[in-house]
Image (cartoon, rainbow, N blue to C red; front, side):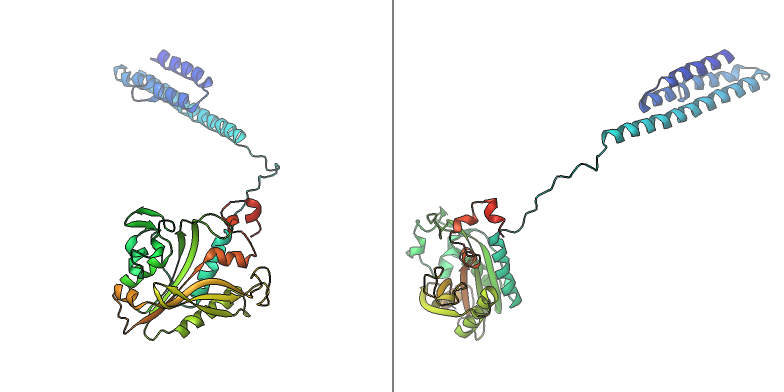
Length: 339
């Protein structure tokens, strides 16, 4: 048994000197010190020894075990340090190499104008309401007092998914949904993307953005609408901005008006931007038609309201002095970097 223990020590030492990976080391440990290992098997046979032989063999066996455990632990530390060193070399970073600059983007000019408009109305106590871009015919037309034979329903103006579903031509359907779900007082703006079958040119696009507003409460008058538009125009275009209303017709408002603001370039004296008129049209507005209130379950004898809608692209063209709305959609970095 003494010879067996010495042989185990010699073989194990030789194998440990040749180990190159932690997993190999673990295999050697199991081979000699595991439950079925060689040293464990020898120790189980000590019961056959005489009383005189046991102390000497036991001392030798414990020495071999201690030697193996010590060498295995020492070898493991060396292997771990070596593997860590290789990993650090592989993943080394030269901090003296110039870094690669990452280009940072910013808001699109249309988003900038949209956010500015929202901030103006949020400051006046309005809430923001949103709705689906793929809309039911009922909300896009019928509930807004636009019957089946109205020109707005011409397929040349509207994208139809089927007879009952369209791509919304304005954000007015959101106003209907708000009035159906919430009773007065109501004070909301409805920003979003809209669609019409327009030919693409400097001032038209099949995709454009609108911000519409709605106020419904007791005693709302045309004077409230004019005052709101004056505050909005001055906040967006400057304190010297003036507002002008011109009679117009919209099926969902009565009376209705187109709204002009004094030219932000010349101040109203006349220039190329305003075509020497001194005024620039920016939105449509009016008092909510009684039929629209009735459809939404609001008594027009008790409540009244006003609504307005403006095109974000048109405002952006004026605000940034741009003469072609197609630039907003061409994703030309040279153009977008200017904002």
